[in-house]
Image (cartoon, rainbow, N blue to C red; front, side):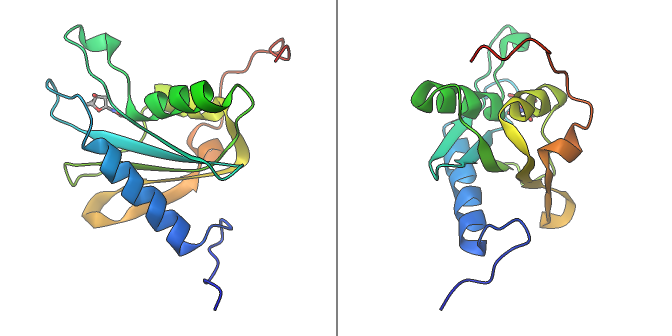
Length: 147
Ligand code: THU
């Protein structure tokens, strides 16, 4: 029996798996200052899944967000041509949390117009949208075609 397909083209099992991986990696977060542990899981177009968590610093502005950590890991593992199909973001505080502005720009760099993103909203609901909708006016460089 085939799984019911979601409008994103992802199966409910794929979405659930991505969310579970985001929760799992959030347990590894280094967040002694905010106590806000975040995890992100990226499903790449080739099927690989890469995760990341936030890594804080005593010099607060040097903190790396979960989404940025996941993107840096994905590029390190698979190279500069990765494309993200879907993203799940989770936190361990059972609260709503949207990707910050900087993370939207980071994710946009490796997304397509169809890249889906899932993150926690109020009342235990999940927002599903696209990275393009989260950042409709991303910064682009016109001369970045050398890779
Ligand atoms: N954080 C993320 O990891 N991702 C976001 O999109 C928003 C914020 C982290 C950064 C910091 O360690 C903590 O959440 C509180 O801001």
